[in-house]
Image (cartoon, rainbow, N blue to C red; front, side, top):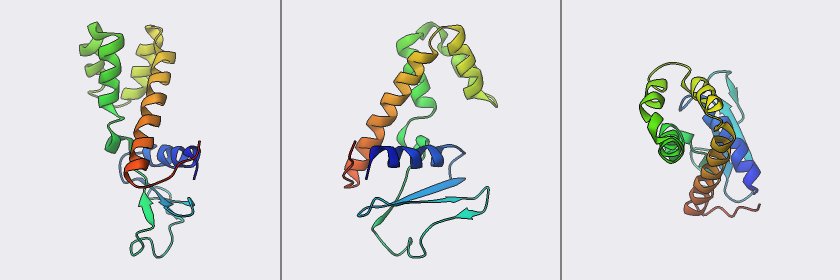
Length: 136
């Protein structure tokens, strides 16, 4: 299986709140299956619950890649703005407002690089812990 396959499934799962979207990967073949509670789309194999060869792809919150990652980035890049960032995340539309804030501070590209690196590290660690061999 490739890193891109895992990352694509991860982004699908993380595109909503936890449990809105699911993705399952077959440990042996690397084949990925998707399901969404929001659109009644279900591509999951019938034996997914009885077969240990299937592994659920985690949500970003399961890997600490949500708000904790934002706070970690802020502590490194703009510690003087932590209170403002915490306020941004106290309401709806937080990520949109956060990205506006980063754009204002000329930190948006740095955030995307930081987030991408952290995501790759977390997914590769998760894959290794679950016995997945990832190419690429």
